[in-house]
Structures are given as structure tokens and as C-alpha cells.
Length: 514
Image 1: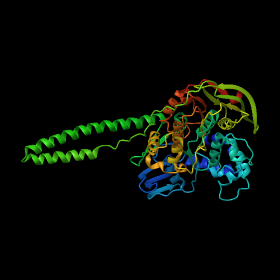
Image 2: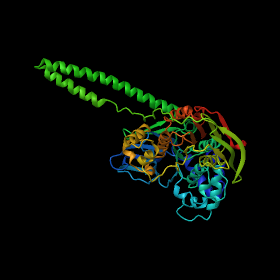
Image 3: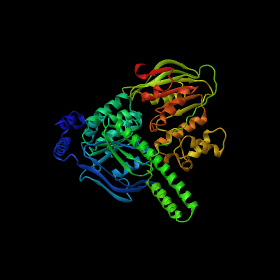
Image 4: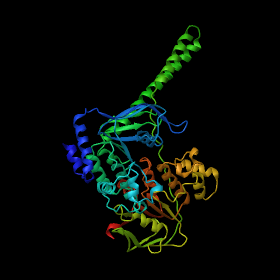
């Protein structure tokens, strides 16, 4: 009965067209066996382009109604696995079985740039293969689920990053899928948005697979982990508390490492014995051969220990030594009832001053930062000649058609090809990516490229809009330390409390209380 009341609480299920699905789901939930499988991978092999294996005869299964975290190192192929589940990619070998009649939908990580000029109605219409005459009613219901209230005529580009994140979730939910895939769903969400999403997923009764770096968020509702190993190309399946699973994975790695140390010691002993017997000649040469054969057998028994991602090395962003006021904020542009309103403030920022900008999704934080970066005279006075380094959350300050090489060459002071490759390597962008176009990079790699660019520019003013989105959690303390030690003028928006706590903050501007 909990299932029925849990869904009935959501306005998404308040219309007649959901009752049939609700009753059907309630019947199956209460009559099917606990081991009912909704998705199965059976010895699946898949390569992304030639020579880049993602899966090698990998197998796993998902029970109906399970909530699972998908983990894996950078480049392991988590997004490719989602595409295989969606049917957007096909395996080279093996079988992917989806329970008969079951459907899959995904809340993607970022909004497709080509859809930014869509109205909400045009956007949601693409969720269906046929015209829905009840589409507007469905849109109204699903927007209530994700805490958005706006007309169907509104254009997507008018929404904040957080509102777009909720819209991507709503797009998946309106399809009422049997398997819901979430790709970094907390990116761009404020605290209230994350809390609401967490509550929704706790009550969600269908199958859910989520990629996220937010450990507390994952631990609040997931019940197991699929670990995609970038080196073995296998999928390991764990059940239980997220933190406990992470500790279990760590313990398995440590155990494997200890076993390999023991084997290495034994292998060395056998090789030393083989050399000793071989030098004595005669019948002892046969003993020596047996010792060498045993050493080779032990080599084969060594465990392929998982290696973790490389962590971003420490870096410092330099800046010129400027005396006196650098940035004077005269007003803030905030959204009230859908309209941009200027409100007066009086904040002067000098060198080595850090300001954090706060406020809920949709109030206009990104719009305000953009006005600062563009030196809008209605909003800010910036000392003449000051260069501003601007990290936009959608990476639109990057030229997506340019190569990584050209992007970095443009940023460095000494135009040297070798220095470009060194800079790229410092920010974990391998040499084989440097000649690729920016648009081919993953979202995390675009973020690292932005940090490399700002590192090379050495600007006296840095503006960051959600700099931890898409970034591997291992890199976040390194980035926090770099911003904490930055001696220029820093203006930042971030909803990640732990990250902000690691950065020295001198001034706070709360747009909600202006």
C-alpha cells in the first residue's frame, strides 16, 4: 500500500491518464517475485570507436524497482552504458534484454544547445512519437513535480541553469518510464532543489540508475552500486549502503594489492632458486625449469588491481599586483515575477578579496555574473584595463569549433607548441585530445580546459559560475585550494557547501535578501 500512497502524493499522478499505469504498477509490484529482472546485460562487449573497449563480456542485472548508483573512473564509459540501455548504441557481442513492454528515459546532464530556442511545449512534444492533445496538462503536472511554475510558451534559454536541470528531469518523468536514468541530476540545483529531488526519489517506486559525485545525495536513496572498471571493462555489482559499498570496494582493492605483494615475493624466491639450480648444472637444470614455470604460473595468478583516476595536481592562478579598488558593484539584476529588476547595492572589491553570491534557482545569479563579466555600466564599474576571467557553467565562453590546441595557444603568453601540450597535460587533457575540437570533449574535460585557460591567462579578476559541475570529486579539493590561495578579486556562485567551505570568503551577497 506504501507504493500507492507514495505516488498519489505527487501531483504528477493526479490525472486520469496516470491511474491505469498506477494500478498496473501496483499490481505487478505486489505480485511479481522479489528477483524480478527488468534489465539484463549478458556477456556484452562494446567498443567506442575502434580500439577503445568499454565492455568486455560484461554481465549484470537490475531488479524492478531498484535504485542504483553507476560509478566508474573518468573515461570508463558511464555515458556509453546509458546509451546502450537506451538503445542509442548497439553492442558488438552479447545480449541486452529489457523486460517486455518496459520503457527507458534519461534526464541528461546538459541541455542540447539546439533546443535553447524551443518553447517548453515544443521541448516536451519531443518526448512523444505522436501528437498529444493532453500535452499541456501533462506539462503542468510534471512541472509541479520538479517545482517549476511557468507557461508553456516560455523559451528554454530564458531559464537559469538550475531551472534547465529541473526541466531535463521533467522531460524524463513525463514519459513515465520503467527505468529512469539520471546523469549528474544535482548539477546546477540549489539546496532546495536537491532536497526536493531527494525526497522525490526516496518515494519513487520504479527502477532508477544515477550517475553523481554527490555522496550524501546518493546515500539518501540508492541501494547498490554498479562499478564500471575502465581497465578490466567489467561491471561489478554491489548491494547496500552507498558509503559501505565504497568502503567494500576500497577493502577489495587493498586486499588485492596485499595478495599481489605476497605473490611478487614468492615469484622472486622461485626465480632466485631457478637461477641457483641452473648454475649448478646437471639434473638441477630440470628443477630450475620447474621453478621458472611455477614463477610464470604465479605471474598469471596476480590480480588485475583497479587503478584509480589520476587526481589533478596542485596549481596556483597568478595575478598582477594591483593597488586600490578593482571592482565596484553598484546594482544587482534579479528576477522578480519573470522580470529583470535592478536593485542598488554598494560593494567594493580590491585585490585578494573573495565574494560569494548566493540565492535560489531562478533569481538571476548567472545573469548577474554575466553582467559583471561584460562590465555592464548599470551594474558594475571595473578599473580601466582590467581583464576578467569568466568560467560560465555552460562553457559558452569556449569556442566549441576550435581545437583544444588553439584554445590554449590563444591563452598562453609565450606562443610555444610544447608549452601548450605541457599545459594540457597539467590539467589531465592527454596529448591525443589536444588536436580535437572542444565540442568532442566530455563535460568534465571542458571544465578542466576552462581551468587550464584561466591558469594561463593569470587575470586580476576571476568569476566562477558553478565551477564544480561535471568535475571529478577527486579534483574538487585541489580546485578549492587554488581558489582559496588566489590573490586577485574572486566572485563565485556555487551550491556545493563543502566546496565553498574550503575557499576563503570575505564578502557574501545574497540576492534573495537585497
